[in-house]
Image (cartoon, rainbow, N blue to C red; front, side, top):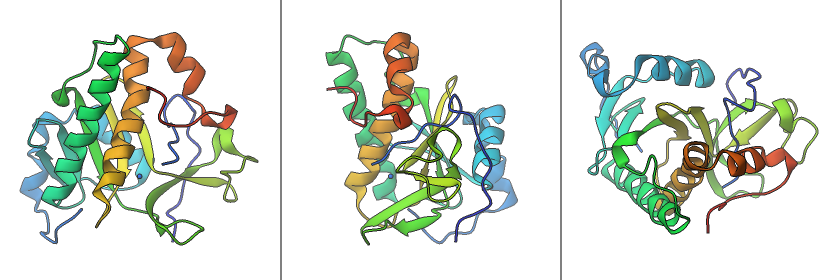
Length: 206
């Protein structure tokens, strides 16, 4: 069942058509460990998703993570791998800003669906259709997104919880990160590619 969604402008939410969890229950103390997550960025992500992120950690390479519960080790490694691939391709394109794992915060939110219309495993989040209304992505006033860019500074995005298909997680991380890398390195190209309702898809950087 999809959560109640709200319309969010294209500057705040970016659709990627591409994108674990353990059962440890977070305590109130866990939320106090959010020092590595910007308070405003946390509030934005919670407003966009309707989730409450109570578990805070970092990936082995230093990316910041906020989740509903303790993420599986495979999830954290997949985030690292996606960012590493993003940075590799970004450098090949001559970009140099925001290419460290510690520059990024990844929010792991609740999936509003786990399978797409073709029955394939596809944990996604539902957001208001906004500029995608009437497009092929419109599901009746909302769209399913693999990821949502929630902040440009600091760099942050939301992805859905996964129980498998870690390669998909890596791809979604890379694809959401493309928007952020372009925003900080090539504003003209960012403006040309951030809105998928006008065409285009990932990967943007080759």
